[in-house]
Length: 111
Length: 276
Image (cartoon, rainbow over all chains, first blue to last red; front, side, top):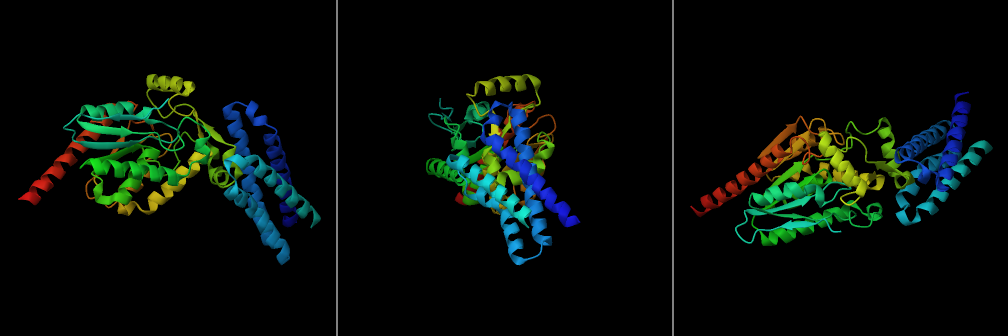
């Protein structure tokens, strides 16, 4: 029961996060006022935090070494991308980040 | 337009004071302070920190190591020319002044740290600052610029309005704080925090109780951890972060000069004793 709630929460958070990252890539925040853009990115930070926590929780409660390892990897992915991203390649890494989250959604659905 | 300034006496200067400005600021914010020190007999040097030049994009690529290298090289240059070299700074500048104190120990005649920023925990920061570590460690740091907003670090309404106009022009500093800059500042702060016990130079710490960007906790930690026997810690009660522009600026200026004069005298007395 709790595992199902966790899985659905993970999927919900990951979907919203993907949507926000995607519309940010379309340049929506450039049209916003600075305060609104700041709130927008802060919500993404909150969702990213939720995504990471839920990925680790799923890794803790799901069965199977391979599944656990994959979920931990998904949990660490935003930090790995954060470590290697550079200002000049930020768009490229944004796409990588979106793809990673989409892959994690597909993976959790397939479990 | 370069905002760097050097104020040098032709002869008979009491010593050199190296000034560092704050994050997203420029030497412009130190101009009145520098002028006051100059009028009191000191040669004053203030240059733009790396990443704070004419190209806005540079703040996204600068590393805290670049700031350290800059601070060390400027100090070494002055030390080769002057017997007495003091370092002073505001916000990030204060952290750099401490870093110079950590590396050069007794070679630094004195440190004046104003609104030292070891933590970003001031009351102006929004409630969602708790997500900041996540934003800083991920790609989100490139998406986010925290907008400069009221009260702009200034309690005095008249000065605040003047600061607002200057920032809107964009000539004297940046109108917002890029998260990448915050990240580098916090990494530098962590390095400095770890090594605070290596600071042995005389030090004057000034921090406002109502600092809107960084709480008084930062200065308290510095005051507690440093090894300097000669230290003075002053808390202001009628200013925010920009203590050099706020209601108690004259007090800050006078305290700084008093500190410099006292330590020139101490150094002279020590030399006399050695001669005897």
